[in-house]
Length: 271
Image (cartoon, rainbow, N blue to C red; front, side):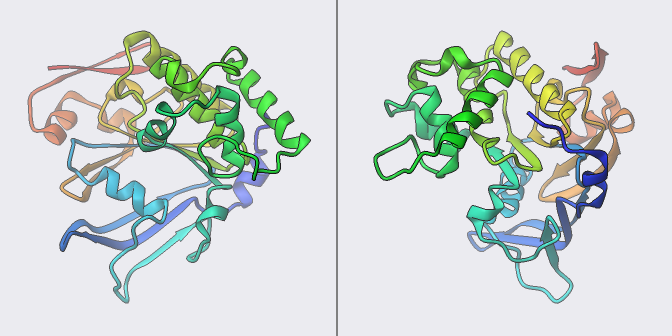
């Protein structure tokens, strides 16, 4: 997998530029005047308790939801305000639990799942015109993520950790500039969590921007240097992880006394 050069990253516009963005769902305002900029090539974790607005934030980025109209509001992705969602997916790869669940009940192999990323489909059928360069890209990604042994395995028969790696490969087929992980360690056992964090570190070191949305501190791999705190639909803190991932600040965020420890570059939470 080819890394983006420093020059290309510096010349690219920010991945996300939100100014006074509010989002209404079910008649209730769930995001309140967010101001966020994520630079090209930057690695950022968005942290907060359940119900803080993280999922709405993701759906706003992926254009499933749209900001409430306001003359002071603006939102740009990769420098553009208007996007065809299919084109956006070529620049922003997404790994969510919703995508994972689509593959678990269908007889799709690992290789077919990755290849289907070119068509935004669940698996491959006769209507898809698979090109040799697509096949080569799938081979490259599965080798790079150390999962060629999953090529012929049915996704529904894989472990949760194996499925996450297959979905990461699927999200990378278009060589996006950024990859968004939504609560990636949910339902994973300890070994699978460790494997997934190894994958996220590898992706970050490749030059790909990493956007992580989570409420699990250990998911914040060492390459992530910036953390954004969300609570009740608002951004309440944004800064260096060394400043924010402290016992006092995390306790305030989650509303309970905690002890934060640092080991081998990973933060851990003790209640």
